[in-house]
Image 1 (tube, helix red, strand yellow):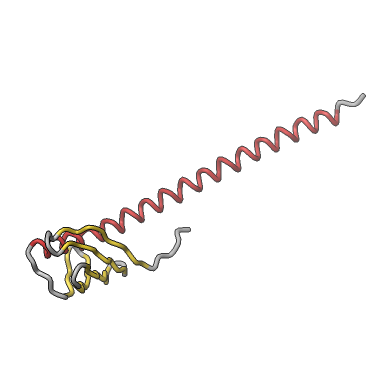
Image 2: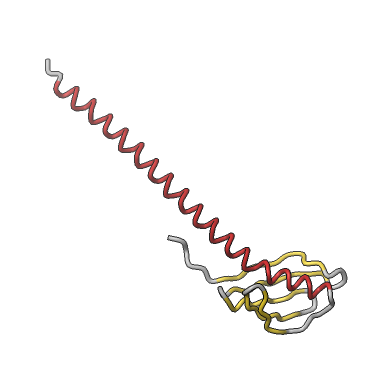
Length: 122
């Protein structure tokens, strides 16, 4: 009766288990890294949109609705007003379009949509 085959199968099963475990842990770390990169990029984009929204809120409060190109907070953008919405085209540092919905009576910003051409994170 040979035990040599049993020992080989035993160590092979341990090796396969450890290899599977390591691949799952590595994949988990890769996913966590992607999440952190995407969260950082989202924070940068929101911080670029904040000066535009603050300027628009100020314009609504002061009843100043003029189509113009403005630089505020290091962000250059072009405003195009309509009756109940506004297109704010950001020219720098990233190019994107904000479509802002507001109430003309109260001067309140309800919502905004962002249209951008993004490259996927690695």
